[in-house]
Amino acid sequence: MSDVGIGLTGLATLIALIAARVPIGIALIGVSFGGLWVLMGPRVAWGAMGLVPYQFTSSWILSSIPMFLFLGFISYHTQLTKGMFNAARIWMAGLPGGLAIASIFGSAGFAAVSGSSIACSAAMGRIAIPEMMKHKYHPELATGTVAVAGTIGALIPPSIILILYGVIAQISITDLFLGGVSAGLLTALGYVIVVLIRVKLNPELAPVRDASVTMREKIIALRETWPLLLIMLGIFGGLFGGVFTPTEAGAVGAFLACIVALVTGEMTLSRFLTAARETLMTTAALLIIAVGASLLTRFLALSGAGNYLSSGILSIADSPVLLMLGIVCVYLLIGMFLEPIGAMLLTLPIILPVVDASGWSLLWFGIVLTKLLEIGMITPPIGMNVFVIKSVVGNLVSTTAIFRGVAWFFVMDLVLVAILCAFPALILTLPEMMQ
Image (cartoon, rainbow, N blue to C red; front, side, top):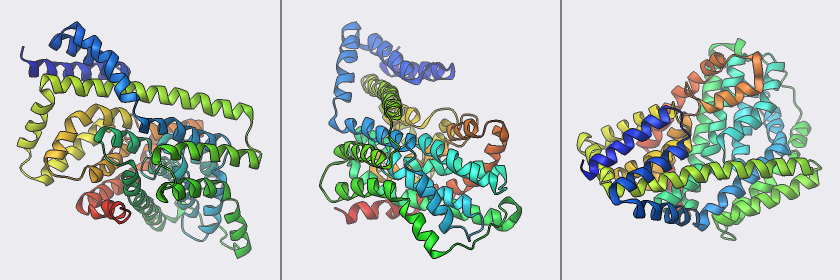
């Protein structure tokens, strides 16, 4: 068998293992190690197992991942995000579907400190859904809105997906964060439009609430947002002001979150230890997958299968439009079965050379890729955000009903992807202005 044949066989084996529900990190490492053994012998295989994990995890930028995760978990467990939703709820009281819109803006606010789509959905689900149910919102609208609003967490910085993409693609994390801001805000606006259209077409989905809110009540509600706003100001002010790097921003944000939680009286030893334990477990899982993807890149490069597949993809697509359409379809399909980080790390060794050869901006593609990966968080059969919301509502709403609730937003997501592809300046303008 030729070297390329060995590489392709390894990829087929990898797909089979993932389909058999073998953990993706273990599947990546096992296939890569076995492939290197067959290609180069046991000495090279064991050498790669010793060298590649160290080379990848020793990247200083990766130290920001546990810090941003800790920031998100501390904010979640000490309820620092509750004031953001309450303020949005009061300010949006006069709009049709105001509580649903408030949950979208509340998720956008939490996204600015969490970096995690699942954490965003879990936090807002516990705060927003009971409030909407109390005001007799249709369960599908209530749960569907919060499930999709959580996907904003991967676009608005800090974003764990964008950090990993930046390390692998070797582009500026700060530029990725800036590009993600516009995409995240555009996504939030798109979701608000969906809520307004749905409630306009069927007012029974969101009964009209008493909108008689005084300006004094609005100002008081804004005061409740100070914990989250202070953390956001500290992170983004220092980051874009050049005081510290994106790597250091995570540590600064986590420290600020702990101080603010102590001041508000929400910090306890139990909550701190829970946040620390969840941070360690999540970081370990992410790094195992990332190391496996790095080993797969080495295996595909040595076998020549990576270049073979990339060249094949480029030769099939006659135009950039067809190529991009094919990439979108591939990620929408993969997203139905794999979680975002695993899907990204599994495919980047093949897709990045294609993007580079096509002359596309790696920065622009990183944001579009993140958007595509997050769509997978709401698509059946393994829409993780949907199951997070299901765990919040229990037997009150069926999983099928939640998937029906996100269907309208899925259509808007496809429209947003088309807009981001057609107008790259929406992503690239802000990073270019800040250079």
